[in-house]
Length: 576
Image 1 (cartoon, rainbow, N blue to C red):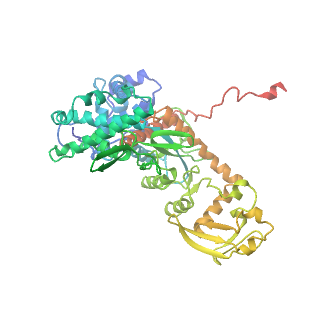
Image 2 (cartoon, helix red, strand yellow):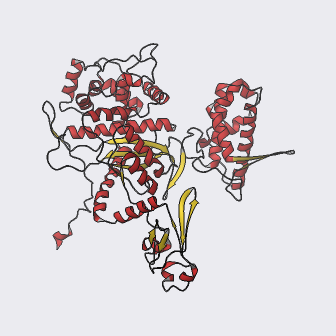
Image 3 (tube, rainbow, N blue to C red):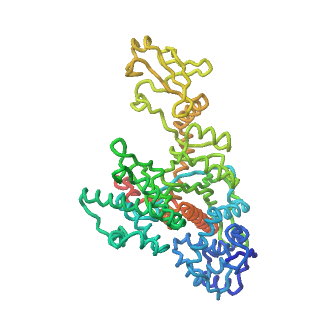
């Protein structure tokens, strides 16, 4: 299928008349067309479509159909039916009433082309560019970011199930690709063990039998890998994705010891008793999605991904808003200026939030939407990131930084780090009792620059306040470099003020965005396999949320407020 760039089609007169008669007040799909016009031009998709061959369906129309699909959390089949049956969708896409639409499989192929052409963020990029031209998003101001977990489109497997299903999937792929070769490598007994999916089998309950079955899986898997890598085997067999998954998972799950008397295959266990397991950030949890990882946050564990949403959250300005007022050409009063999503980042589940602070800023910089203030929770900042954001991007990172974790600070009694005075110029510190430090030693701790400050034993041992300071024979304090130490000290002092707390209170609103993303567009569980397609899914979902919020703005619908139950609103003063 090729792409031949064409102008965004005008809405056929009959389609427009029928759509407006079926929905006199209009709806989301129609208002998008009326207010935004062309958002996704075909020329933007040149990297994903060829210029030769039979012309295909307009990729700009397919992208708009995908955004509308996510705005209602529809399946591919339901979206294809909506294009065929709904006049409002035909109006939004510029189709004639008689247009037969397309098969649902076209949407799947379209997503694959976007991933292959590295266009996973195009849905949001193009929309934000159009909105920037209308003045609805801009640089400066205030934005906020938060993350939520995403379940992979895979089944949860324990280690025994993972081994069995991985081997079965490899055998299934080989049976489809090279049945003659596989029939000469295995016998009929393999069909009895691996002929059905692992979740259709009743695995043994006893630990001894489970260990025996795990050992058989390991032995059979290594046997199959040896046969695949023999010189006589077709070279392309080892390149099959299922065989590659088998090789990687077997390295992680089994340890093979080869001796003159044969080989021993055993399941890997944790050190020091076992042979060691790979770290969670590298451990595969499914043969079907090699990007999904298992992670735990607080007391919640999940297998899949993590997504970060960034949105504008400027405070309402006093006086008339230039964006409010009647719609052009007459119509309802415009509502509150919407908080629109400006950046989306999807990662493996094991990537910490702090690792995404700078990538989010880089993404905003590329879109020329950098804020002056960025509100995030305590998982995102560090002293280095606070300084880096201000120096490189001109952003004030507003976030509660982690407090002093010393025993004195945790107990809320005694002399914590803030009780000491540090003179970086003189390379000396003074304790609350007025005693100067005896040593000031720069060093490296975990590849980071640090300073260890110590006080003399002869001063600490007889000190009357020793119990408030240390349980050892003398006090030692570890500092970061001067710039980092002063940044942390300033942030810790500032975050205790009422003014800072009032500023930071705006961050809580991002939780509503998380709920809208998970409950309206359905991103809590990934629709597709692999990180690239999941990234594409989240960018389309963000574009859909923006259009839903724009529709509320265009129609004057007020922003939803936090709901509370009848019991929470009960007024006990009435009974007094």
